Image (cartoon, rainbow, N blue to C red; front, side):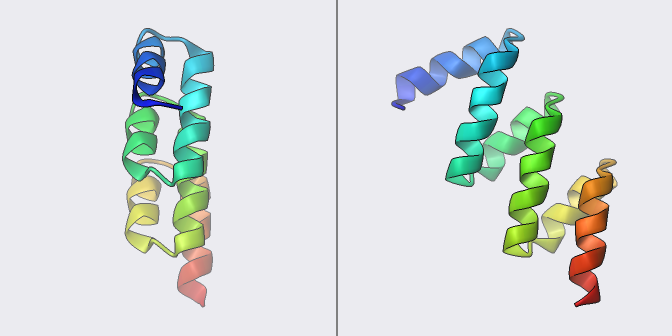
Length: 86
């Protein structure tokens, strides 16, 4: 996907197109793009939160998991607890 296609998806997502949001979440997850995922999560995408939790858990990113848990993600709190037990 080129930059112009990505820009168009972002415009559609900002206008409330759920399919565009889903595509952006998938693409950002594949790229490991935490900034894009955070932006989507802040916009209300629970799928983006789920992907952030998954990626942060895989990377052992405790700070990101704490941030997500502090924002109310029970999954992030669970993964964080598991990682801190190790």
